[in-house]
Amino acid sequence: MIDKKLLEILVCPVSKAPLEFDPERNELICRPSALAYPIRDGIPVMLESEARPLTTDEKLG
Image 1 (spheres, rainbow, N blue to C red):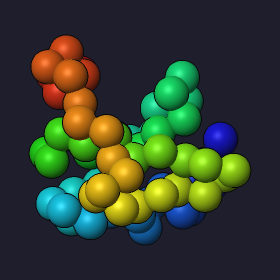
Image 2: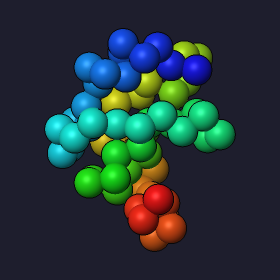
Image 3: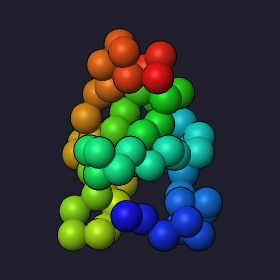
Image 4: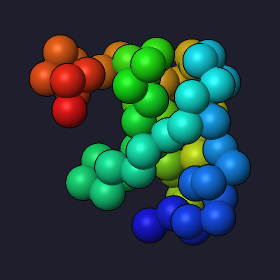
């Protein structure tokens, strides 16, 4: 789980768009840039090089 206040201030480093929390995958999703950022040990890893590209279905979400 991620703190709601933290989620309100975090943005995608690529598109600067707001992020959505995906509790099933423990990731932060950015639909405009089509990237999913992992959360490791409760800490969001906000590096483009660590992000996973979204699938087509996830992009439509």
